[in-house]
Image 1 (cartoon, rainbow, N blue to C red):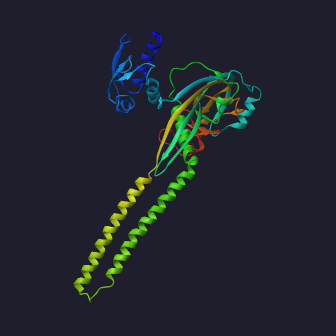
Image 2: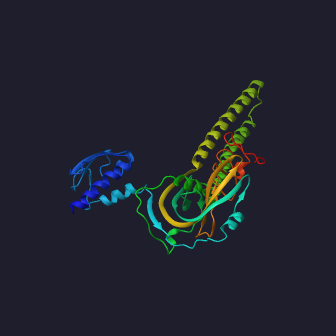
Image 3: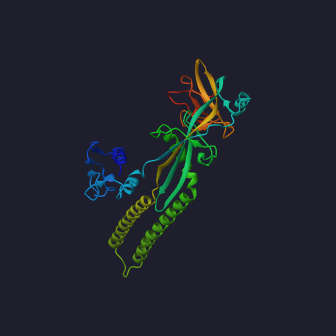
Length: 361
């Protein structure tokens, strides 16, 4: 193996272990080094130890960093939690230039402000398409692949077509790291969709839970009825003391059965408890031309500039996200001091830091 390739493997290994939370001591000109890694990383490495020896030579203890052994397979397992990133661009798309102000007026409703278009121009934006593996784990398991695309400038989640399916797509600029500013927006949008996507699964789990609850109640109620039936057929005439003792025993038994039933129901709820997880798999960063309209938004004595975008793939304007709940909307009010966009729902429920009343302004 060439010296250049070995140096690249050396640097790659150090960066990979550090990214996964490890501490690496491996000088660039040394044939061997050491690393201290978290338990979950150690479980993937050959020796399974948190203190691991790194070496360019094969066959020894620790992790052999060369292409002769299982280095690539081990590195692949360490890379599994990492999102894959691709950078692309759409260099030429038709941009609508005429009658944009008229289209703007038909698309948006401004609920409590005056809006003046100040500038209309073509610009280039990045759209981040995140692909997630969504999982619901309960007594059974549900999984699905789903995506969300975010305008990296406005933060709006938009329903764009799959960029990898577009014939105009070209390789874009090389990017070194994934942007984290759009991840939360995409994850939030997908999280809102999961209940609808997994509706059948959730209904099935809830149905099973109700069925098993009924079975438990029927079983323990039958136990009580059987015990009461035996006591209702005494072999001799009972004295008052025996009758009272029987009542006390019956009440005690009923309390014991109720406690056991509640314990079983709690165990049942825990078994059917639903845990939702989102795992990012792929990020597609697509740079594309759009038309931007710069708006001057006036709210009482405050003023602020907001941008809206006409998208050539959608062939219409994109919505703006609410500054509170992040829901995208075309009918917007704006807060008093910060002139921040608010959906109609948040506008009708003012908070202490932004009291925007429906009849003010």
